Image 1: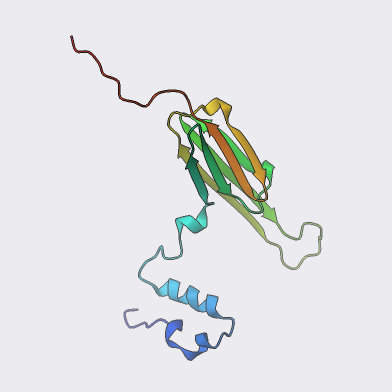
Image 2: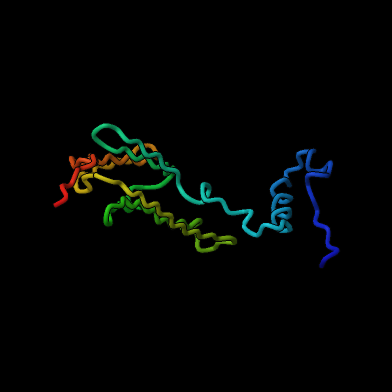
Length: 150
């Protein structure tokens, strides 16, 4: 196996011609690469979130295109906001005489630690594939307190 030279699409005229096999060549390059995790990317494998801190609240936006409201679990554990998505897709449901049938299941979860937040007053809304979560801040002062020494 030491003498095996992988097909490298970057050095061929065929890949530059736009034949439609670019993804196949990418797969071959990934297979023969030294990095066995080259196809995995945290940002691609989970949903994206934005967290904004305002004066009186935190605003969290999660991009969830194509996800229905009943596929989202939103919860609080300790001081963490947990957003989970559990999705199961099944193609060609109505035909019994099918030639090809596919199923896909996906589960993604993000955990966000929020300091000094009123976790019992959270409001959430799903609109056009964006989950917006508003968490009011608690009135706990984060300022340094002096302690008298006896």
